[in-house]
Image 1 (cartoon, rainbow, N blue to C red):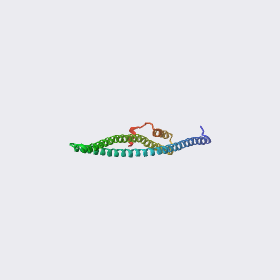
Image 2: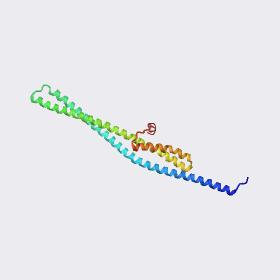
Image 3: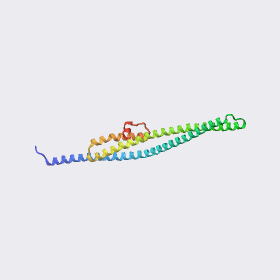
Image 4: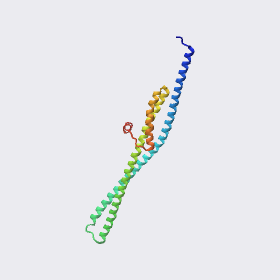
Length: 202
């Protein structure tokens, strides 16, 4: 059987063109995927920064409310201590002298009640601040995990572009999809929080 050199060259050129087309398609797909991921990561970064600022504000509010709570608590204790002293001092008093003690006792009784009420309100506000912080922290964790997964995906895509292996591109799709879904959860407020992965990264 004779081998036709012309046919051999044409076959080789055809295979080379076919391989070149597949490589070009792979490179184009990698480039588009990386561009889309970079855009998505940029959007997530802006939202994550805003959430971090809100977390810092919630933490500051919580500390302020607990500080005011302690101040109210001290004022209540001082009022109650003064009230006890006035009651002891009033014993055996009569007339105008007793009336002065009664007036002072009424004032400190009212002051103690006011401080107790305000203290309860401050405690509720501080606890709400903690709930707000915890809720925001869940979303911050989502963005952190999304960023990590997408960084892994981009690294895999870079290796894909170098090695020109299609199977490596499909492997990179797993962290791509996972990162995008978790990032969307952070953007949309979905309650998707893979605790095991979050603990691993914490």
